[in-house]
Image (cartoon, rainbow, N blue to C red):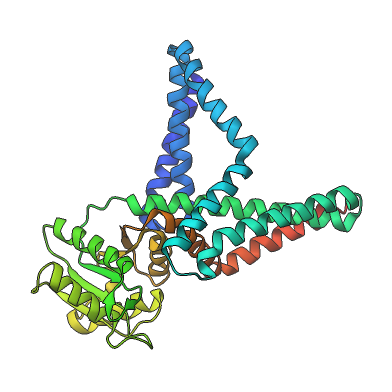
Length: 343
């Protein structure tokens, strides 16, 4: 009973932390970590209850799960290689050839080559102090990146499905490029997601379409997006155009200026939703948060084969966005590696 009370107390504390962090900054990885730990604590309570009352059933439930994770632990690299090659083949078959579309493949090759080099260094020079220090630093940095990527992924999933019960004042639909002055399928997915959310609102928010004109485009993304909405939805919707931006951060910054000019209102004090591609949602929310704007996220549909490539690119963007924090942590890992090899 004491164990149950302890687990319940831990769950309540984690729930409270999750609740507070969600309302302070839903895009923070600490929010994702608190929610993940809360889910795990509830799962642990559920498992302990099953074990206490249905021991035989719990045993047969655990066995296939344990076998699955054992197979995953033994063959994870082989499975990863197959998945990356299948995904890369699908991307190159359906999308144009570019370095960006090869990111998962390059990441895998880089990881395998690095692990091979570390193995050889460990095998031949493992007793050399400088090599030992370098191995500790590189392995701890890899572990940090894997942990960061896992938390980023979980937080991104949570942010996409995060419920909102507030009246939304503005929906920002972020641009993503045009093809011959027409919205791309990717951009259409963002617009459609925003419009589906718009339809569900009892009090209709104002739509702000965001995106400037590229060097090879005759009209701005915002104009093309408004045209798409008029042709596929309604012609008399409340739509503002933000047609000067070239980046996600500018999308939000310039949309704030549009709201100030049109409504004499501060976007920081309004309830807003950002409609963009699912893989881009968390970083867009983080950029809004850094500008003092708390945004609810609306994820547009993305083709399944394209998600790994796009998500790795977004994760790299997140690392750059938080470069000071990441440099500080990696510096601490280097210091730890040096100190651990001095004694």
